[in-house]
Length: 190
Image (tube, rainbow, N blue to C red; front, side, top):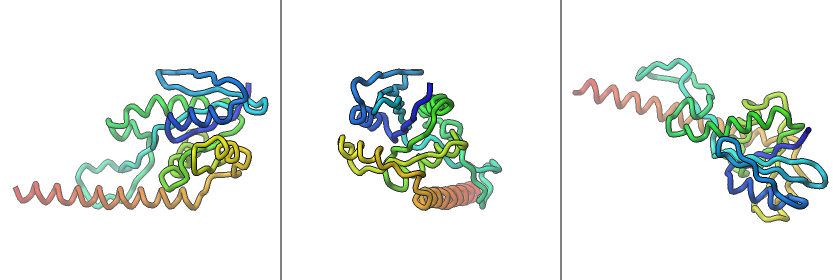
């Protein structure tokens, strides 16, 4: 069984996309209490799953404690970087599982720096051997969603994704180094 996998940025968007594209019925399925939707669109099977924002986060490659400056960063699954992101693990696990048997992945995240980076990271870290197409829409109306699927771009917007990644890296480098410097200054001052 082959199918297309559409990945939205949020669970509510996944349902709206499924509702807009369905020929007849929406089959809601769950795994580990995470919903996803199975539909037929023009006789093709499509599964729509959701991320919950960023599923990957930056972390210090060298794990230097409070030493700075730290410039060597890497992307890891968000739930491995922050306890606050533990909830995202089951969403990532579902997307990993669904991507194993799909014929193509279509990114349907928000069309902004954050949305493009979320989609880019999913495409490259979850399923790097598959090309990710890109649905672009500005509203979650039926007409916009149908148009976005019918006119899906052949790939994600790499300049926008790289701009989002650059901003994340710069924020991380500035924030971590400043925080570490201030923490050590306060400790040494007593």
